[in-house]
Image (cartoon, rainbow, N blue to C red; front, side, top):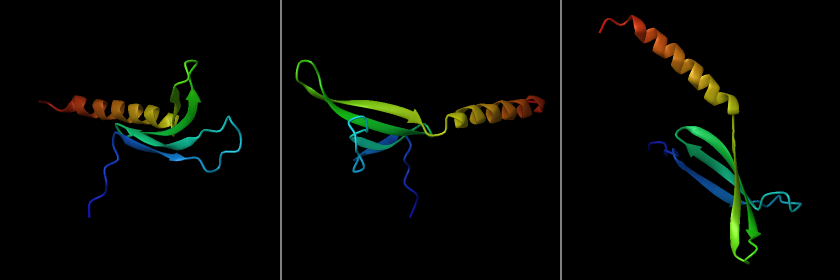
Amino acid sequence: MPDYDNTNSGALFKNDKKKTSSHPDYTGQLDVEGTEYWLSAWINKSAAGKTYMKIKINEKDPHARAKHADNADKLDDNFDDIPF
């Protein structure tokens, strides 16, 4: 059975460990083009009384993008010697 491809998808789950109003109501994960993020969401009411979700996204490993960029630069350097 092939592995499930989670690219460009994510999920939020009810936060059963919420203890204060500053803790998110929902937490989860998101993958965008191979970069993984933590998701947090709070249920709020607007001044007009409409219910909405405020969402915060944090990169799981903020240094991973820099590492990936460094490796890509090294790969590009290796291709400079190819004669075609």
